[in-house]
Length: 240
Image (cartoon, rainbow, N blue to C red):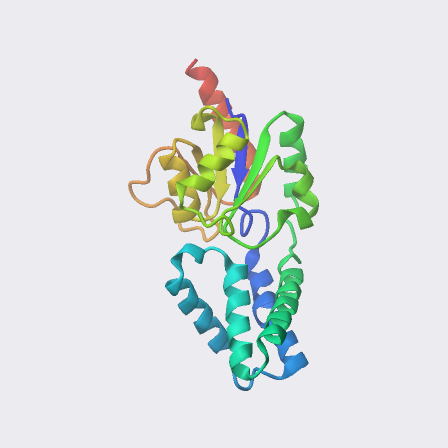
């Protein structure tokens, strides 16, 4: 019997492509309009430095807000700003970035689906590597547990974020839990290895890989989750 479900956020509850297409140039352009730095440090240089910083600090590879803030501060100091002023502009830019980051359009099925699951007594958790703060979104009220895995320095596929979610949801057995996400390597495989049911959202329609392990169920869209849950419940009753 399925008693809890954990969800990824980006590309699970909404299409994240358009969001990031607005976020990436949007906050950088905003900063350039304030201080005119982009002629010296174009967007591509900002991106390159962020990637280099992540490689230099693998522990923080999943804390994207930290990477952005640190890169901006260092760049603006190099641009000629005093350190305190550079930090202030970096903080303001990050806040503008986060405003854009939360301008998401939920898939239309999501609110009613979450409400229905909660009404049936299913406990819900979120596990994200991204810097979306679920509490800024209207669906936050449905969740018992929110794991910001990148900020916690244990980003997926690290088992600790899954284990923490299950413990906080009160799950004694992983087999009573489903994890739903769009990443094969960061969602499906680590959940399956822990004994959870994994609902892999194959948004790019690539199909299950050859020799995919048992326990990973392919979905084309989040709207198909209810049918999978019914199938799992039916299988559970047949094997009792």
